[in-house]
Length: 285
Image 1 (cartoon, rainbow, N blue to C red):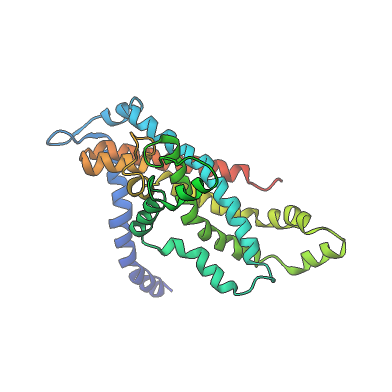
Image 2: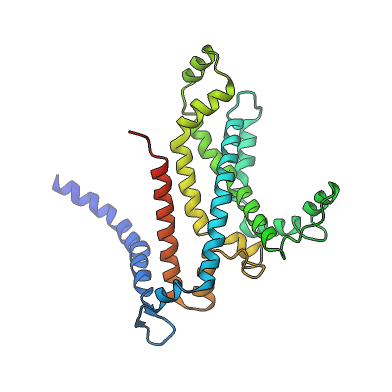
């Protein structure tokens, strides 16, 4: 038995070594760096980064933008993903495999390519979105120079990219619900709408909660869309997120200590909000 255990640990040792080197140690090291002043040479221990964090207007601006996206975009995306999953699960739908691929495709599209397409679609002068708005009598919107419009653009882009991904996850939960439950409800003359709200949604609650937690974690580290679509958080920092602020401090200003403090704050907020969602969505005893 001992020989078998040693053999097992010997096979696992390379993985644990890689895991500790590229995962555990960077986490510990970044925490230590957050308590160092990295603007001097050599680095010295200091609490300057955390003191700056709680008095930095740029941090509060990025935090507010991130929370706005979180509060608006995540519920809209999860609701849309649930509806898409129900439609994909319908026996009346033909070529379901094709539609599943189409809904999942945005995730595998290159980030630079899809950002370029969005910038063209929402262009003020020749973008198709403004042309469609003009067709119904709405004045052209300056998507990249107006703060609220730019924030709406980020929300639309993130929702488009990740709704299908969440829909596929929710679809897997839908397909695990026994058909007998719906047959019994149909025999009791329960309408389809009531079946959705009183059977489907309660049984999907753990899956939806899982998607919410994933979405919260993803939103807290949102970077691609504000960096590529709204030109690095523009206009005037109106769409700058915590992920983008971390990038600016760590890779442009080379202020690694402050960037590490921001990173740990992002992680703490993601954990706190996720735990809150799990607590709200817990099963009653």
